[in-house]
Length: 255
Image 1 (cartoon, rainbow, N blue to C red):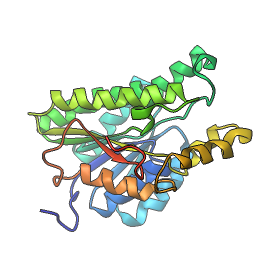
Image 2: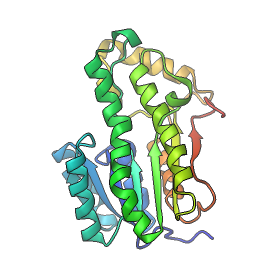
Image 3: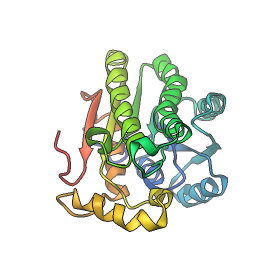
Image 4: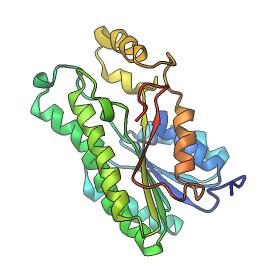
């Protein structure tokens, strides 16, 4: 049964939480009663995010590079000690990477995108799943992409990383199905966020138009729309879905 504040008393760790989709998810979770810890690599953006969230309740932050297992372990321990546990993990940290042909990616570019978008999510799960298992309760929400289903031309590393995140969700969902920990992912189409800043200026408008052309509803997904879905997946109202992929793509992908 839905309650007015379905996440009351829960604590959420949200990676890439300083802006965009991550910040919107934090805002929705707090409106639903949760406390949050934002993990991000940008100190100034984190401080501003916490300032914005302060009127809603308790928000903390930690400088965390999800490629660094030591930073993850330290921040997870601090969140657990400071809030008595971690009930929700949202793996949102991600980068777009190069917008070039697959064979033009450098090995360093390829590894960086995979390290942040996929291995980073796995490292966060590796640190936090045991915390959830100890309490036999938890929700993990992975923010993948419709690109992980379809593949985007000139975004091979990004598409591959998001496809991997979808498969990680399915594997982990099966492994934890009897443990009270549900694992699901969301596959949004493009949102009009700071991710476009990674695209060279001369290609930015062309990419935006190409992405919009693939969406039957002919608009970008709003960050609050993704946040609403994430908050439901983080709640007890989501009780019989795990290892699942929830599309939010304006009709672009229907499988």
